[in-house]
Length: 585
Image (cartoon, rainbow, N blue to C red; front, top):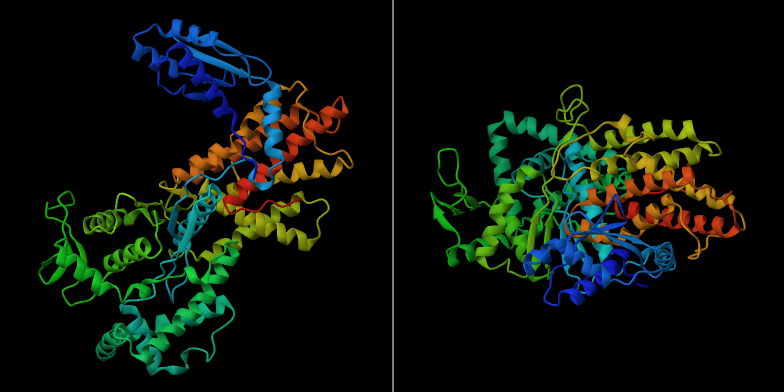
């Protein structure tokens, strides 16, 4: 792996040296930012001047005198306003830097961080014996993208899918199956949809009996006790429900083009044996106290409408454990056994208060230390095109499978309309990639904590900020590279660059910085915004700079080089977000 220092960092180093030579006591970063008037603008001079009680414009002029200009990096620098520095980079520096990235394969010259940690990401949390619906979409898509970005930065990630596979509903389900043993097929279905169809039927039937028959309700409650105490017959039937559900889960995640590893599906049941110890440790340490028979944790700053404290319930008065106990036990496991340095939860924003209390409790107990960060990546709601929570016409929650199938179907219409030399099989394959990519990108291009509208017409549009626009930009580049024949991409630092080439080149150089920033802030929408701007800058370059019909062979090769590097950057960036880039569209 060949690490390439970004142009931004190179310029910052040059400016810091010039500032130090001018004002030895200065320790202010030059604070570069992109500018409309030049490639970069440095505004840190103002802070340095204030600290030194100097005239900022005079200081800026002195700093300029200590900056070496030329073809190697900074071509021109001028003082503007009260003391800003506008900097223009040389064409040679831009091309040479990109050429170094070009030789580094998929990494594109981006080095992994020197001291990576271990991040446990809790995402994609379906429930056993229940269909996945639109509400499960964002946790899966956002979590998968965050994991891709963190992996790219060098972080070691461990996935955890905290599925709902424990609790009172399983007493109802298992008791019903014991009394009606013919309701599930003898063997686990290999078809995910059929597996869930069976489970849904059993769930609805058992719920009907549970609500109507008090004797059955009592038997179901006793079955919960048998489950929690490890009764073999009860556990075997419980395992049937889990296995049938997993077949279904995998079928849905496969449609989402997402890999879910079996060893990372660790549901609530996995923490069952550790919950009594969690409760004991909290009570013995005084972090939790008994209140009306329940074991709870109180917080000074968390109160209800009547100004009464709202506690975190670790253990109910009847001895049962709830979500807090399993979440706290999971933290103990992830820190002590998995050696996590970061805990990241991709969970509905409505659970924010719960996790605030869980994290604070874990810190009081000493399970979360200063060396471990815990963050709830609360996400907003999926809305319909009308701005209301996404529902079917009958007012029911939309099945996730139906949503994905419709996206693929809509994408097929777009691909078929534009396809020139694709077979029907190829159209269907591309439709899968375009449709699922459209769903993912619409989610990821929105700040996670905001609600977003699920509008398929907009998602599969060729115009605007959509994944289809990015995919077509990538496919267009591949078409150009194929048409180039024996002429291959090659960097020519000696050539003067068109303004559109410079803008594209500077943006390509910022890929690594953007990924690191987006990963550090858990902000996939920042990477999505970068990729959209990259595709837009490429479109401008393509319109203004003939590639195959450029004036000289060297110019053709250099523009093919810019095309290829753009394609590789789009491909890598989209891959980090979990989106495919078809070679032909």
